[in-house]
Length: 510
Image (tube, rainbow, N blue to C red; front, top):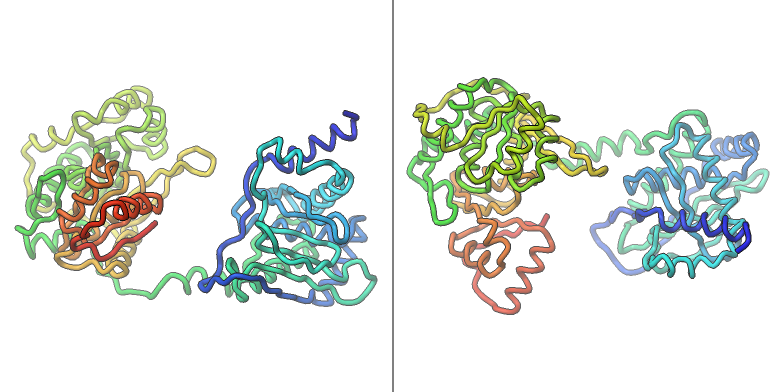
C-alpha cells in the first residue's frame, strides 16, 4: 500500500467510522411516499457578498454554501459535526463528507469544509464501498446530500434531503438553492423553513465571517416554537401539588388514593403518613429548597415520601436504589443533597456512596414513622417559583446532568396531562416508570389532584407481561403510559392470547 492509498484509507476511515448518523427531523403531519422540490433564489446582495468573500478566502463559493449546509445539519440533528453526501464531480456518486461544526468562526468552518472537499476529491477513487463492508457499516452515515455542481438528482436510498446549487461559479447572475426532499419525512412548509435556515447561515457568513456560527432560526419561528406549539394557555390554581392534594383529602378522605402490591391507602392515610414524614424532614433541618434524596423502591411509601418533600418545602431528588454507588454519590454531591430518605433493604449501594460523599444524613422511612410526629397538614409556605425537583439524566456525554423544575412548572405540566389524557375523579392511573424517569412523577401524582387513584405496578409485574396485564385490568386502570418497545411486547402477548383490557381507555406511548 503506497503512501497516497494509506492516507486515503485513513481519511475514509475517519469519514465513515467516526460514528453518529446525521438525521433530518420528521416534520410532516401528512407523510406520503415520493419526493418534491423546493427552490429558493439567493438575494442579489447576498450573492454578491458570497462571491466577494469566496474570492477573499481563495475558495469556491460552493465551499461557503457547504459550510452553511453543515451548520444547518448540525442544528437539525443536534450534533457538533455533520455528515453529508458530497458529489465530487458532475453526475458522480455522493461520497461521505464529515465536517466538525463546533468551531470558533465561520471562517474556520468554511476552511474546514473546503479542506474536507479537497481531500474527498483527491481520494475519490479509493474503494470506499469495500472499506464500508470491512468496517461493517451497512446503513447510511447521513440522510443529507450536497451537490455543488447544480445537479437535479432525486433523493434515493436513505437520503431524505438533497441540496444542489446553481450559478455560484458565474461572475454574475442568480444563485439558486434547490432542495429535493422526501415527502414522507418533510412537508412543503418544513422544506421552506430548512431553505430559510440555509439563507440565514449564508447571511451570517457574509456579515460576520469572523463571528461564531449562531442560531439560524428566525425570531417569528422562535416565537412559534415557544408560544405557538406550547398549547393553549390555561388558568392555573395558585396552589402547589401537595396543596391541591390536600384539598382532595378534605373532600374525600376515605377514598382510595394509592394501590400497590395488594395494599391500599386512602387519601386520609396517605396524607397523614406524608405529613409525619415531612415533620421528620423539617426536624432535620429541611427548609425552602433543601434537597432531599429519595432512595426507595416504587411503592406507597415512595409516594408518601415525594409528597412529604414538597410539604416540607424541600426539593425532590429521586435516586434508584439499584444504581451503582459511584452514580449515587455523584448525584448527591452535584445536587448539594444533605439528607436522604430511604428504607431498609434499599441502602446497599447508598451506604457505600455516603462514605465517599460525606456530610449526608440517612433517614429510614420506618424510623421517621416511629418518631410519632403529628399527622395534620404543615402549611409550610411554598412559592410558585420555588424549586420542586431535580431529575438527573445520563446526559449526552454519559455524565449525569440535573434538570430542575419549579412548582409552577410542575403544576402546569400535571394539569396538561390531566386534560390531554382525560384524567378525572374516580380515574385510575398506572405508575410504571422507574423513579429517575421524569414521567414517573406525573404518573405518580396527577390522578391525586383530581380525585383519582394511583396504581403502582410492581417491577416484577412489569417484567412479566401477562402478569402486568392481570395487574392493570384487575386494578381497573384507565390511563396507561409505556415506551414503544414495551407496547410492542404487550401487543404481541395480546395477539398470542387475546383478552379483555377491562376499563383501559387511554394508552400513551412515550
